[in-house]
Length: 553
Image: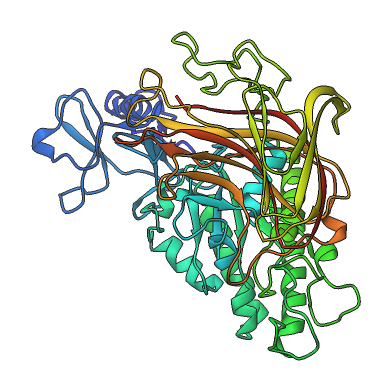
């Protein structure tokens, strides 16, 4: 027998001369190395009687040797896994269609890679928290809202993708303990996706205000938040954690969203403890909008006017932009690459270019050889309109003047653009500059089950007033199937116009959620649609750089 076991894998080694057992022990060594050189199993549900001798299996639950690796070598051998081993299961697919990766915790196989695993991160962002996370989307899940800091981050950074609500794990009213219970219990969200099905990627965490409001002790808040971050990192995610945000206004605790008197210092302490995570935890990115969002004249954790919506608790485009600026900077520092690129005027659909634009004149040129009609200036628009597009001011009271211009972008590059100068007083909330192409459906190009996505590249000058977001909508003329990226919220607790300090120059590429083309649909339209929040004074200079709708293949 060998003198000892070697470190890490437990291979046998160091045989004294003439020691018997060398042959058998080396067989075990080679068998182990053959297995772990590429840990992949055919299945973890197939029973022993159906095992294929050329494949590796995990013995399913309820069977003798459950959880062990089964390999055939002149008979079936069962090997005990080590904690932290990652294995690909070939007959199970994750939410994006790749073979699922699972890891052995020491007692059970769980979905996702183990802590410390270096893996390629998906660009699909996930979000975890309370109502401020849930409200990235509307209740019908067809519209990602202008108040969505997740969508605003995608537009500004072009480093993440928010293609649908399937990775949104926000629940109204939840505290951190409830979020943690959903994660560890693998509870599905409204889209039917469980936490374990989320591919490793950027994970945005915003939660805590409900616990603070309930006077949960700081030690409990941080213990729960630490457990949330442990869960995410153990599965290969990169957490981006928001400091909890100021809320409420006025002087009366518990009124207008203002925290109770005893909760106000807890909120300050909680925000500071999150800031400290950047110093104490590896791989955590802390996003802090408190200095810009808090009322500088208040010691009550109150929010600055025009940052939250009218309930003074939940996001409005103001806080969304502040959060997106911080998140975009952090994503760049973390090494996420830009994934969205401007559309070329020649990037049009054909059999040889199936991801080309389905619309004409995607670069908003004055005229284009693929634009069959001249641009149309409709209600409220004067000046010129790009070929093939129709421009309309909606909401009443606001007008737009169109022209063509070479514009200098924030990175110093110059681009041809269609310039729209908006002015006046909006007569209703959600007024907009609707720049649209209709009649894009072609049965030879779009089939049932195709995924469609729209994008709108824009640049808005500093000093805009009442501007909510540069939305991109792919519409079927049916609210149940149209997909809207960046629409403002009206009705109960509507969005507010951004505070003056948030009206900064904004270059971005806004995206619609993914649309699945359904049987019976015949109308397909693209809208590049800057929205305005309120019935109020409105002004903005907006450059339209590119816009298109295409198939995601």
